[in-house]
Length: 365
Figure 1 (cartoon, helix red, strand yellow):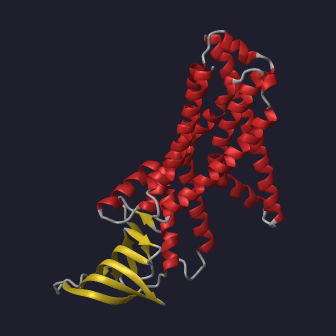
Figure 2: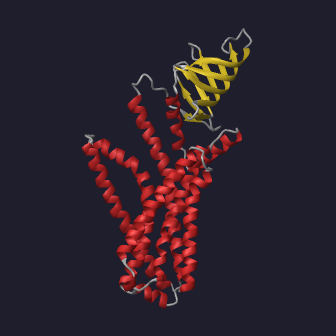
Figure 3: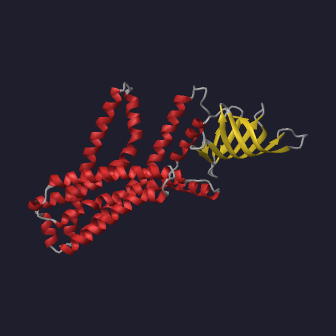
């Protein structure tokens, strides 16, 4: 049995690395040519390509697992090796289990890619953005996500922090401002439950608490309460959208903590849950894609199977899956469907289809 497993494993991983190398070369050539056509410098082309690679790999890896199973089965059929494996007592169940184990290793690599490499690439791109915007008068100091899950940023004469920015309402939640005096000491603090963009540089603060005279030793701090008050800020909604891009620099574990922190405050965190759960879904998709072409083992005779037909079905499956999955992700980010359904629903449905196909063909075999 070990020899039969070794034969199938060799064919599967050979197809995996072969498809990965071919697709990798095609994407590399296309991306470099695109950079030259845009008139970019050679250095910029390769930097952009390197930063884009983790995201390209995130899409390539599931497709390569699908192709590896497809090519492995058809390669074994071409030399009648699949018939020999099945005739040697190796059941379809064992082959399914073997491919499942192989795909789990690939899913682990995908986990490292989407959970850690992609955030590192995002962080590097953010740093490149800062360098390019450093002379822009509208550009503010880099925001940072603190240990409490709040986003911090610095303007000219104040620090600010907030827990969440609602892009649909142009509204900041749990907004704090720390005004600085000329000697860079905290002069006053503004605490608002919500801050909604009004117009120009004005924001409407709701349930505002103001603490003044913090930098004066001989005066006790003054505290005022305001139900609603217009406050001038140098930032506009587009600036806060840019600040929140820092969230994509968090690895999968830190992102989970950030989402949990938002949940405890009662803020709608669906958009961030989708980002987190999509990372997990991308790993599970590797397993789904690798098992989908396994139906071919129930027809081991090469004369009764068409490789061209298998390629067409694979192409249709890939396009349909990514199309439906992308649509579900968009619906989840907009809050129209729950995040867990948006991210894991489609892989689960296709998993049920794979299971049903296996049970159906096993009875006929």
